[in-house]
Image (cartoon, helix red, strand yellow):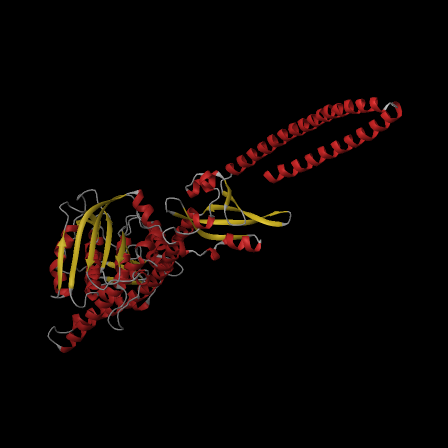
Length: 599
């Protein structure tokens, strides 16, 4: 602005001098010639010349006054216009949401808008004349941490080339910092680089949002991966359960035909024991994939944890101390007691392996309330009251990379032959199936803490644990057996016949409907697989109910909970038994359904 005024001043002064010179030349030349023509007396000529000189002074003074007054009036108007223009430019800059500041050739601040000053924590007036690099382009705790040569403004003032910096740190007056994105544009005066203009914005929120998005995307991919592996595990377990049904069935049939003290009976018992271990393995797979049927009943979590202490002492050894601290309040949850016990045993076993030189295992229970703040922080859970079980060890701990995979099936850090990688996967599946959730904290050398959250039940009212039967029931009724797997069908038929039942076989749903229609008076119960080709167990159920609404149907499957839900059977009053079928469990389920008054 000062440069503009000085130029206008020089031009106006030159114009005034030019006008004055022309007027003076004309006055002297014309007046002298006129006097010489009109006045012949030399004495009189001198007097008139003196008078003419005084008139010249008066006239030229008036002329100069008029010219200078006119110039001053124009100058004041120009200054007012420039001040108004400057005010409007400042208003425009201050109304911008981004920070904007100017630099001279030395990198000093020439102006700063309000948004920029506000972001930097300074008053605008304080920044004028300060070095931008030394003021906010580095941490004042260590001025050498950000050399001036690495500053974007340094390149601009040297090269005159505009550039954009996508991410940099600006430091506020109070010593705090924020992430910025800024653009530097050169400023020229008569083709000479005179400084630059910088536009910057605070992108801290955007960076946090991007990081949160990862993080959520990573969680989503992990959930997808776990779901895919769960489907695979569930499918494998389903097929394996059919195989185990045949092995367990024929093993029991063999054991029933052999004397208890014979060598062959011992072999049969070993086959059955191995089958039980295999069945536990499939239950682990189903628990992970959340496809296992569970019987939820109100139980006190404090009692489960306290009752496990002696068992855990035998499992983890004498060199590891166990501390159990239970809540003073009853922590009633609806759970499958056996599955929760197995989950805690798996966590304790995992902790034992993490403490090869001994240590302490601590299990605590307490009531917690999950609120929206917890959910926003952890990105999981539902609001409400929960029972929290914490399992803490003083072992070797885990790094973050390991923690990201510990709940995946078959992932293990143990040597070959010392772990299947299913223990924590089963824990994960069990807790999810109980509508709870689990997380883990760990650091290398600092041990690990697993936290299990289970929804609290409202009361003890309702179910009681079933009592174990000591006598295996028999019967003489006729059963229609529907099973597409030949091995499972044959062994199931033999087991039922051993208990005195008559069996009609059907290899699929369509044959079952036909045989039921042809033998309508004979079958007292239909035992059918749930998942079959062409016609599912649900389809069989519907068709037989149309023929005889009072028909009693017992479903069986190596899958369970999610399949029942998908097939629309979960909420109906249906009877179900899980594979692999055990003779005693099969006999009890059949007898209970046959003896029930309403089927």
